[in-house]
Amino acid sequence: MKGLVVIAAALLVGCAPTKTLEELEFAALASGDWSAVEKREQNIERRKRERSVSCGSDSVPVCSERARGMVCKCWSQQDLAEWMGAL
Image 1 (tube, one colour):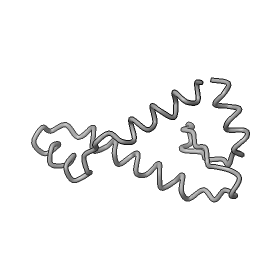
Image 2 (cartoon, one colour):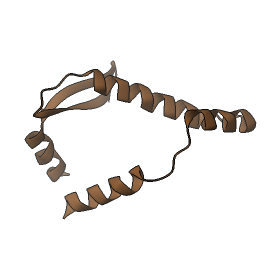
Image 3 (cartoon, one colour):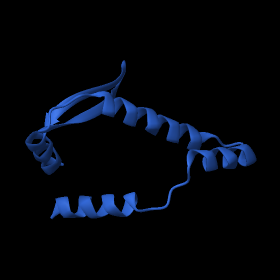
Image 4 (tube, one colour):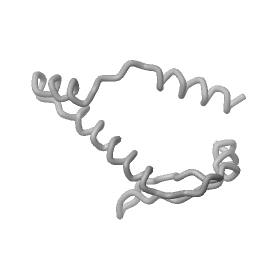
């Protein structure tokens, strides 16, 4: 049941309209608040790092922020499912 709630929440968030980086920059120029632009750029960099981790077909990259930077490891689908079930 918990998994269904997580999937439903992910679908709702994924389908929400988002502004392009260019639109965020124009808004930041007008308001002077660049936090949304910085957050989007950080997310873009994080996704690039996650894609650069080469995992096998039966595993996925799982990344975490550490003192020395982002650390990504490959987790099997089963390990990830067990970890998510423990939350």
